[in-house]
Amino acid sequence: MGSIRFDSVNKVFGGVKALDDINLEIAEKEFVAIVGPSGCGKTTCLRIVAGFETPTSGIVSVNGKRVTAPGPDRAVVFQQFVLFPWKTVRQNIDLGLRNKNFAGDERERLIRSVLDLMNLESYADAFPHQLSGGMQQRVAIARAYVLDPEVLLMDEPFGALDAQTRVLMQEELVRLSRVNPRTVLFITHSVEEAVYLADRVAIMTRRPGRIKEVLDIKTVRNEERWNRFQRIEDVMDLDSFIHLRTHVWKSLREEKREDRQ
Amino acid sequence: MSGHRRIWAGWATLAGLVLFWFGLTTWTGIVSAGRFPSPAAFWLSLVQIMTRGYAGGQLVTHAWHSLELVAMGFLVAIATGVPLGLWIGWSRRAEAAINPVFLIIRPIPPLAWIPLAILWLGLGDAAKIMVIWFAAFVPSVINTFSGVRTIERPVIEAAQMLGTPLWRFVIEILSPAAAPMIFTGMRLSLQAAWTTLVAAELVGALVGVGVVLNVAQQDIYPGMILVGMLTVGVLGFATTWLLSRVEHRVLAWNVAAKD
View 1 (cartoon, chains in turn blue, cyan):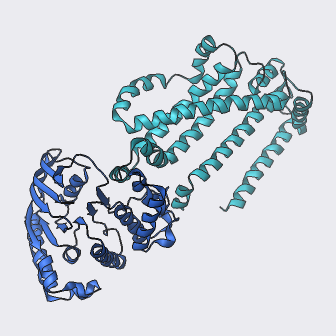
View 2 (spheres, helix red, strand yellow; view 1 turned 90 degrees about the vertical axis):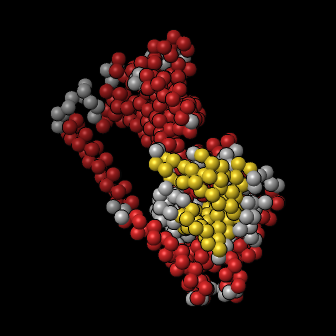
View 3 (cartoon, chains in turn purple, blue; view 1 turned 60 degrees about the vertical axis):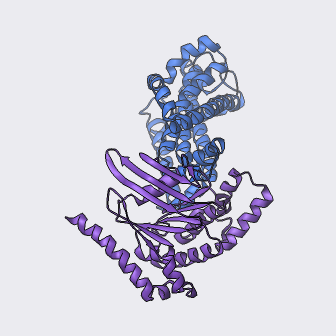
């Protein structure tokens, strides 16, 4: 349940090649981050899995089924949160459950548990504009999580947050994926974020985007027991973390250098 | 400027205008009574129509009838214009099919429909409602249409990824997202309805503010003409105010978000 597969995926936008022969397999409950220079097409990869875009050639499948349209089995968390401003926090979270035709008491139970999970209990009846950016993104994550999706697609979800909120949210996401592991495709331009959160990091080239390298983080993380630390800065101090981060960083920098020529 | 000062400034202008009115008519007689009524003449006309009646009824009867026509025409225009705007806003295919027809019909002044309306529906209220409807219809369609077109794409994508079925999408996502523009359209529709009313009532009506104006013109009765004009002004102001209260309530999320 919840595997994602990119099979020779190409995407052309108005004559410009955005994605070039993307091949990637994400296993069930695996957390994969894609990093790459801006404009490399990493968000396009996610949008194809979400069903918002169709590949020019090649196939993207989830659970072996070809993706053709958006659906609640692939919940998306957007960079700009995209809550419905006319709905309260509760109504925002409820919409997906109502669409799945859950009974009223079941919905209430699920909403309560996800509000509790995201520390949002006292904001159930607030409107989005009454919440801070971090809070709004928590609601967006709750809205995705409550559907118990097979796949969670996160498009630079913390990119619009200030540095402190961002760190808190990253730690929260790690906590969340321990309690409730999901298949996650995570797009970011932050190397630290990718190495801290993901099981594997896929590095993309500049446009047309290709997958240059896929780096295993999980093995190192387990060997070095990163999980014994609660705080991101303690993990970031470890030699094993620094080593991986520098590796990704150098790989990306090569792309930047080619860019300048 | 604070709210209180604004209101004060509004009343001051009004008071100044009334003084100016007194000055031109009663005090100096620069404007003769045959062209424009003095405040006293206006008052007598107002008392006359409110107590004894004029042109077939008291002021309340005329005003109420006009209000009914505007309300009916306006509501029918909203009920048809907003859904059409949503539809052609959402579906490019519907837009391509309907837009050419709309572009040809749109420049026809609402009053040019009066002859056809009378042929179809006679001299009764139905023909007048039809003309008001046509006048109020266009702003509702256009503004709802652009309200839908300016919805940010991620909002639509978020609803899609949550698996929202079409009818729920239209009611809970498309309509509220376009609501600020829909209300702009409704305000313009209401104005168009009042603008068209008097002209529609000039033809074959028995009661209504338009009738008062028409009869007063034939009687060469400036005081009553002014009563009729100001009645339309006051009613238009009152209905617009009412609509803005509804808007404020329905769009509470939007008003608060903008502050």
